[in-house]
Length: 44
Length: 229
View (cartoon, rainbow over the protein chains, first blue to last red):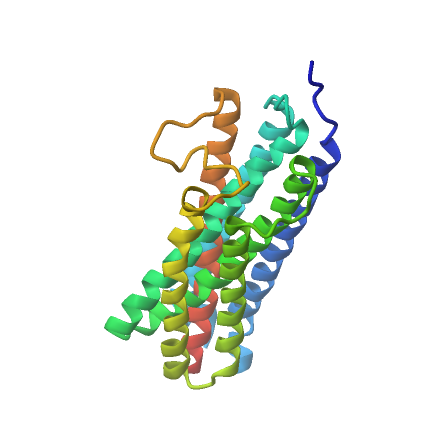
């Protein structure tokens, strides 16, 4: 009978990596958006 | 001039941020559903749950790249700079999802195949597509004239659009070890309902996340371009 392999570490790593990647990109967009909204008077 | 006097860009940014917020909450829900309420697959173990992030990120990435190609073709026909702006936004967001796809894939591959990477058609074509968009971004950064930049990048965008169907169909066209699609295929999905609902939920949330991201990115581009003109 086949046993289910212990691959939980890959799952945990993948879920953490995706949270970091999505979080970093969302934060980068948020920073640029805030700059675009706030820095407009300074740039003119 | 303030954000209020530039209503198009500012409104788009605010709308996009709201959609992104909703999508991020939804993505947290997908995490909870996948980790707490979805059974583990018997032969692959818990690593199979990487599918709930990998497949939807691949979908979002390929959708983003396809829309770049469509907007690029439309730009060459209509010469509307908003189409070029959208293509630029979608390319960046597509690359972000491409990174998610290319990092989760090897983790699943290591668990399932015993190897992080295989030079087989699906993986190789996907890598080529992502690298094409790295080149797209590099090209945009090097050309200063907006019209010339839009024209040249539109050509790359259309080239990439041609590649997208090959990426999706490569599992049927070539001998490959990459699993075939479980949802985006002509026949019915082949997953038990408990797994299917998580996967569908993740597809929906990644799509909403794409909409949020691309709206913010497009809004930033609009605001910058309106200021420059």
